[in-house]
Amino acid sequence: MAVAAVVGTGIGGASIGSVAKADVVLGQDWNPVSNSNGYTYFDGFTDYAGGAPTAQLQQVTRNGNNWLQYTNASGQYWGQLVGQNWANPAVVPDNVNANPRLEFDIDLSQYTWGRLMIRTDYNNDNGLGGQEAGSKTTDLSQLVAKNKGTIASTPNPFIEHVSIDLSSFGLRNSAAAWSELQVFLQPNFWGYWDADISTFISQPYEAQTFFIDNMRLTSDAAKVNASWNVDADGSWPTGLTGGGTATWAGGMPNGAGHTANFMAVSNYDTGQNTIGAHTVTVDSPVTIGVMNFNNANGYTIAGPSTVTVQDAVGVPAAINTALGNHTISAPLALASNTTVTVQNAANTLTLSNLQSSTVALTKAGPGTLAVNNVRAGALNVNGGVAKVLSDGSTNGTSKVGALALASGASLDLTNNALVVDYTGASPIAAIQSSAAAAFNGGNWNGAGLTSSTSTADASAPHKTGIGIAEASDLGTTSFRGQTADSTSILVRYTLSGDANLDGTVSTTDFNLLAGNFGGSSKRWFNGDFNYDGSVNTTDFNLLASNFGQSVAADAGTSALGALVPEPTSLAILGSAAVIAFGRRRRATARVAS
Image (cartoon, helix red, strand yellow):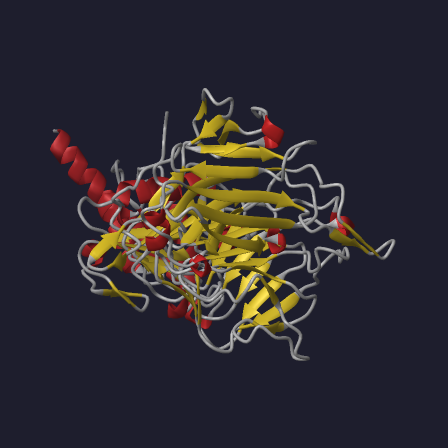
């Protein structure tokens, strides 16, 4: 039997006296075990369900983990989960005293509609023939993405982290002979208001299915999980609209590990259908662990103050978008490794004021993440597109310590530059290969390291693309406004033929091509402008088509100096080509003889 135990994680550092207490894991594997008393235990918890063993609580595979499934079918007693110290040795007064917060994750993706209440009770024998008891009911209805008026809408697709403060229970007697922790999972507990008949409905309970996992007792500070609850603009930090209406349901989300939901439902009783497109103003700094967006009408998180994304125990830092195009234009600072998921391929989440950091930013999901730049410890694009907004100036230059692009995923630089300041072996082969996949025969429409600005170029072949070089190739210590040491890869949207990435195609670039003409296993810096590994007449023609031209990147556009090189430039290039390639052929012949 997998019973919960006190686990020495070293986190959640409350103490009683001088003894630090670690988190107490109550349920994680949820292995079902039948017992002689006729009930089924799940990590020491059971559901009495009217006095008969239940088939409604069962171990299921959910999101790659074992989650405890709950369905309040007819006859069940509110989904009462009871952990008793004789079935779960972690449910003892000392643990509750030292860790007065109950936390768990909840999956509501199959929740039909209505309210959701969680009632938590704790009881124990105080050793004197009486009992010590405490009870708290928590309204989680703000996490339900459907109500009576939105029953056809998408349910809440996010895994939500719930934190319940039980400190009001007071200290329990550690000498108690028995103790139990009861968690009542209660859909529509206390009923709901039916606007159609102007009546409060208390029965019947709605049959619901949902899943819980990672249940623990902790001494960590309570974490607010709230939802924007008005069809109006308002201030995040004050929690008020301009007219003084409260904006948040579930408390004020402002702290490490807190969650802010921006969904489509604002009233869970009366059937408010949708929240329109609104602006949430950050007029003083806030900290958040998770931000969830799920509304076809776009939210804008704006304002002069910074939103800091900071994880906490049990809450990895994340920004998730399930539906709609949303924008965070307020300064966004990542204090923890952060995953940004855009689940709908048709949607874009825009972070137009992402701040520099040293953490890892991971892009997940098939949709698009658009940013002003990425200056971070690492960028991992595991799915969809990470796109740098069109800028062209040094403001648009990104810099990361590591870059990873999964198969089928893209990093779109548009008309900007990138520095990959790597440690260890150079990743230039992988970066070059990713650009070659995006090049896709000259169309720049494949997945990989790409430029949608080049894709949009109507000329054939495209006159621009993604150029790549080692900083050591160029002997430079800075690139497009960012420092670049000798172990840096330099990437730039530029003209085909711009071997040294200075934005201009000149005799310097021609000499680099000429010196490698006819060679194989070459790179862009060597004159391989079509990413086939060879330097030949195809690359020469790409260079020739742009000779004497500059990419006007600093003007913030992708415009070229002139679309056709001057005849004198072509004449000079032609003469140089005859001389250079002739010398190369004669030198090759001498070597061969």
